[in-house]
Image (cartoon, rainbow, N blue to C red):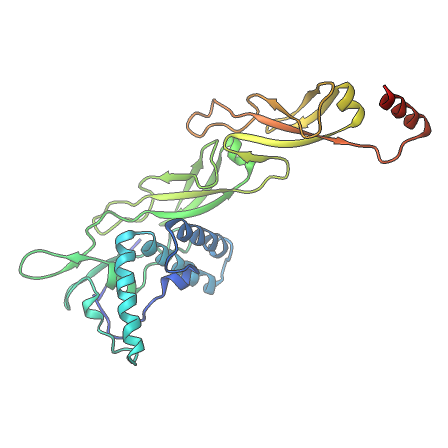
Length: 317
């Protein structure tokens, strides 16, 4: 991990439209920004696009855009810059003539320190000169004004998709950071939106302090179960005779198949609860939710003469 310095402003600096990069409206909420970022990050991550330089550059761009739009202060400053830049364009301003100096964090001669993140997750790139100049530092004290990063190192987010089974048992993901292989542990009970903190595993800031990495979990849909909180929902189909007379049927759970007793007179759509067969609680993995099995009754489409006769007798009582 290296540190790179950039001049505080550049008259030929290119304006970056972070809203366009993330594909969101200027009025997008924080959640909208986060969702757009996660969707793009999953698509453009270097692990999914090995050797694709175009995807790698776009991946760097969306991380930079997200770093600005998720932060209220940076976003407010960026919006002010965007309004000023747009007015300047509307008056016929030529590229290269915009007065960047009023928007940069330091005066000429100052420096902005920037973290180069090229090794993070095998390709999470460093920020552009535009970002470094506009957001990289704060005015110093004393007779000479300088700029430097004084805030805490930023935290980085990495979308991670896991299966429902991995969410039940827990999982691990290998990360490559600064040439080091690290295992990120995902605890049992993780849900979509769960943030797993890897404290001090990210790049160091200008003050030498390590930043944090957050694995942002997305649990993939499962063909067998629907998850609601820590409870699971599934379906089982039984024939009419089992629903009327009662019986037993095998149903899957997260650990194994179990025998479910169908009470006599079970109605179509009725739910049967299997206590403790749901998902573990994230902060108390020894406690589990429940599994609810909805019974679907299969009505016979064709009846033999004998069966029809019996049904007619039942209808007559």
